[in-house]
Image (cartoon, rainbow, N blue to C red; front, side):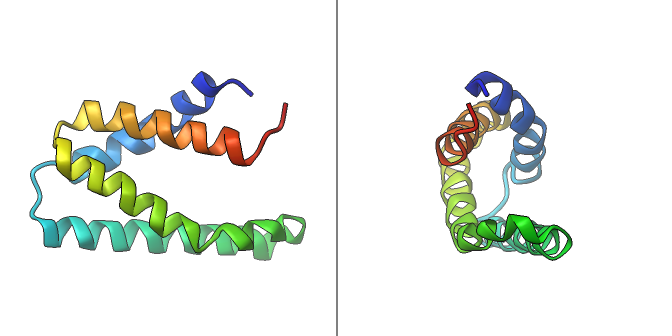
Length: 103
């Protein structure tokens, strides 16, 4: 699967996250990171319960809050929503293609 396709699929989520964190104080960004991490880890946990053949994703659950923290830190340093969204989408897309090589 080409990186550009995965990055394009991650762009709406990345843009929504960047716009929600735009011009927030560090404490509010930490709260946003915690909420986003809980929702994603909870959703993946529910996915594992509904589709047991995806149990290998359980090994990746602790990594998602770290990745989201890195993306939030980059967003705090730049604080330009579209630039952050494009960079985060490309990084997250590359990470997905590197971890799940389906081609």
